[in-house]
Image 1: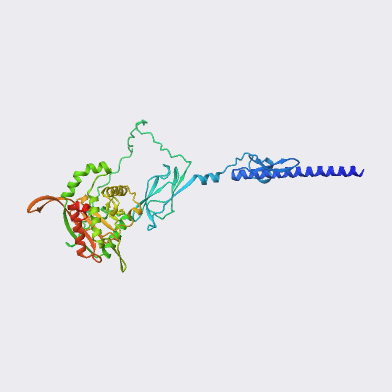
Image 2 (image 1 turned 180 degrees about the horizontal axis):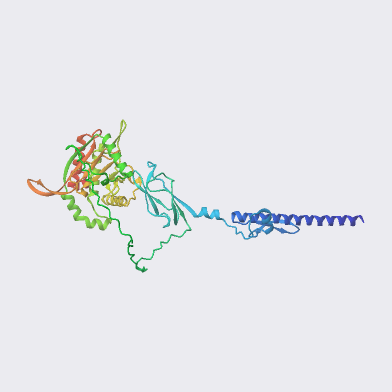
Length: 468
């Protein structure tokens, strides 16, 4: 009897435990259903819930939850929710769809720039890395590229603003469509009815006859008394005032600093270009065939300058405080005139290059300068500068030293002039050369020897082969 009672109690207790486990399972499942709906509502990713297993025990495996909460869950935990509400990730899609175009790093010595102009406008389609604006700095013009492909939603900065690296310039939407320009139909296509000319209304009343008024004599203005020596200035309406570009400001400051710092002196010489022009004419076709670039005069003068700098190392040196820095390498800066101003890119290690390498380097730098694609690295450094004013027709000039260098060579136009050759007067293609140098560091003797070496090498290029 006692055993039957005990077994009955155990069965009832086991049944109660089973019912408790099932109730607990249902309660947890209901709670997870609620949390699943909340998670999908706010994160767009449904959670999982445990699966009942055996006699109410839980399995570690997870199954996908329902796509949304039950009505009971909404009524209890989301009082303001509508039964027709669709859960979305609006805030996440908005943030992920918009990207910002910012001003890139502009170089170690450049801290800010001026937003020169926008290449795109709101509504335009842009590709990744496509330039949308240009930043004008003291040295170069830098492009602001789009980080992603999309449509420009709006422009944050304005033209003329001073910007620094990291400044936001535009907001780009990756999913927007480019704005379509709707062309209005021409007025000629849609005929308009002719306008009926309205006849002026005639007043019925007779006009009043007024007695003629005596016109008062106009006062005559006395002529302004101006002294005959006072200049007559033009009116202000014929003048324009525009802001100076940053590149022009930088050029002006550097040139003035050069005049204030260096004790500049210029020495001149003339060179007969007959042999060099004959050499160029004889081998120009073979040079192009082998190297893929034309043989110009600039490479010859760079090689001549390298030889002269090696013979006179003081011209390649520079003053640094109380010290003199001798540089055992030759980086030749080549002055290039562009529409925005004068830039001076550098040919690195010119002393290790041949004629073809120099010509390729000059062509590459000149192309980048005309396209406004020069970087800070392209113009940093330089130990000696060559300026060719002859391409513009300059006959003679006194170039200004490019700081912190100590000398600059000026080339000029080639003109047929009469010269005495072996007692005979002959017409020869002649060029004037000018060397401006810092007289604090370079004496006249070294400067004259330097320019004489360039003259000898140009007039007889075979000296380069023989090193004499």
